[in-house]
Amino acid sequence: MSRLKVLFLFGMVIVVLAAPTLLLGVGTARAASTIARGKWSIVTSLSPGAKGNDLAGVAALSANDVWATGTALNGNAQMLIEHWNGSAWNLVSSPEPPDHFIDLLGITAVTSNDIWTVGNYYTSGSFLPKTLTEHWNGTSWNYVSSPDPSSYIDELSGVSADATNDAWAVGAFNNMMESQQTLIEHWNGTAWSIVPSPNVGADGNVLSSVITISPNDAWTVGYYTDSMGYQKALIEHWDGSSWSVVANPSPDSNYYALRGISAVSANDIWAVGDFQKIHGRDNNLIEHWNGTQWEIVLSPRPGNYFNSLASVSALSANDVWTVGTLSNNSGSVQTFIEHWNGKAWHAASSPNVGSDDNLLGGVAVVPGTSEVWAVGEYDNSSFINQTLIECYCT
Image 1: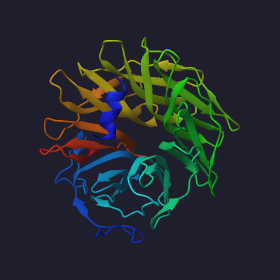
Image 2 (image 1 turned 60 degrees about the horizontal axis):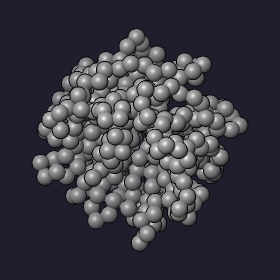
Image 3 (image 1 turned 60 degrees about the vertical axis):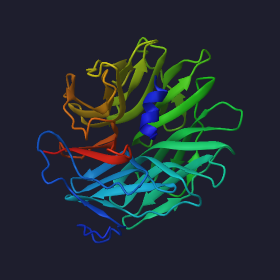
Image 4 (image 1 turned 120 degrees about the vertical axis):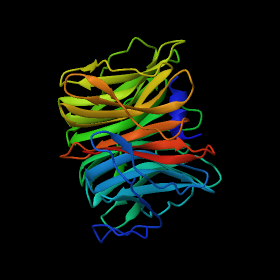
């Protein structure tokens, strides 16, 4: 079962590129023969894992420089990194950390030679996850050491950077028999270090996504479990000196979580996730920061069984995209995309491969354009996960 599927259960290259310095590894995939303009279409991507593949994060620098990261499952789970050069998606080789079983979850790009991806690797024989950070310097991916606060479980799920010396990575950790705590790490241009972060719940404090606006302004979202065992959304803010919890509204539910965050500016920030009423269906949750407070913004819920949002990308005040998954009573899981036009959220038509599970877990708007990329996975006829990449190209 892929981590994207777990998400929803939990809530209820021989290659020629334009830039010759890119040292890309084995495999190349041609783009779909035609990319539909002005609507979402599927673009051919690579699935090197014989036992499973998925993409969880995507970052865009330009129309011919987009990156996606995830996991390919063969004998072990291995890093999966793909690059779009304007005409095709290509596999990019990356070094494996000291032990095997890799899970990449988040990616952020500052420039074409300054890109981070984060996730976890499992220690040999113990299967206890440890933090993993990898950096692209314009020529190759390199393993960069990151601290682990516990001797048991340490995980990173999101990363964001606004400068070469200002990047944040978030996740969670816990020691054996102790409660789960938030984990925040900062890159100062030389090394990653742990920065203290607050916890709200008695257990289950998890940070899923982070956005860096400036050295004195960063946000992260996730969830925690309160003393009654209910899951609640968690939002924290960095003011340049410390992280603090910021109140967020409840969607009239005891079970709700935030999974993605993106910013237009310091006073225009979007966060997405899902909530569930007791004995009811999952619904997508969208919240907005207006510079003063967080507010819930209503959005369409086309799935009559569940709707869940995993990622959001904001280009301007009237151009924001969010992606996730929905399901109707038929039981099949389908892609779910919505767009903010400055006044309201609207559901967008998004393609699926086959009639079974199709999941989107990451989205990125190409700066200075109206082009958007979304990544995830689908099940093929043999029920083996394959990468799924979709583009809204104009």
